[in-house]
Image 1: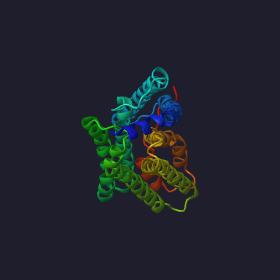
Image 2 (image 1 turned 180 degrees about the vertical axis):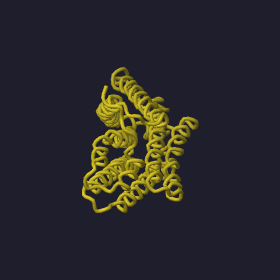
Image 3 (image 1 turned 60 degrees about the vertical axis):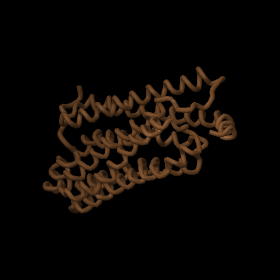
Image 4 (image 1 turned 90 degrees about the horizontal axis):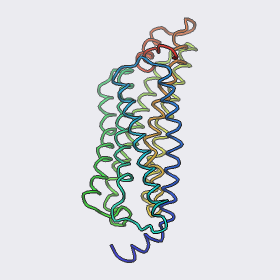
Amino acid sequence: MSSSDSDSLQNSVPVRLGTLLIAVILNFALYGYVLHQFLSYLEHRYKDSSRLRAVLGALFILHTYHLSTLSYLVWKYCIIQYSTFKMPRVFLWPFSSSPIVTAVVTSMTNAYMINRLYRLTGSKIQMICTAVPAFISPVIGISFPILNWTTAVHPWGQHSAESNNVLVAIWYTSQVLGAVLTNCLLMRALHKSRSGFLRSDTVISYLIRQAIQTGFFASIFSIGFLVTWQCFRDTNVFSIFMINLGLLDTMAIMESLLSREMLREQIESPNDIDITLAKQVQSAIVGRPSTGPR
């Protein structure tokens, strides 16, 4: 690395640490909301499958681990070493492990959404078409930091950014494509399920809005990462999107689980509803009833 590149990196230390601190503060806020959702889920005691409960438990553990490591990173760089801080040759492991955590979380949430689509439509072709781009993303997301660890390339160097541009582009483009495709097919299947009954159509409309919200925020953050990585890589703004993407996916999944009681009340009402449609939507989206609050 040339001396001019090194001087440029040192001069941008306050900006890089500042944006990293903003990213971690946002992660704290999102984690607090997700924690509230998890506690609400436990309070309702849903009779979900052991597989789903295991996935939710793994998501909570991953987010807790992620927040703990990011807290250590901020403590190390912004408190202990701030007055004597120099850009490291290889960044500390908490930051480098963030893409791995995000990749694992997105793979779990993608599997959940694809499973919802398959249970609603029963189409294996649609399931395969959505699974291919959805799982290319986590594979690249896991290999990306490992590649940088093994090559020991400076994380902020121009050479590092240029050599990884193609990998990053494929990573987040496939993530956006998978999320958009899955949610578009889900919205299409729900829209075709409209029966003309006011109550059932209200439930369908709510589920369509929920699908839009699930794909919209994740796609915005993925696109935001791509833009900031390409255009503002010397400011570390991309960390705001990369670090918090997994929490947005988990928030969407938890919101869909927690809304089931309200939807079930609509579905189980004997008035103004298509019974066949009610059973189909309840099986595919709403799930099993809870045992009630503790």
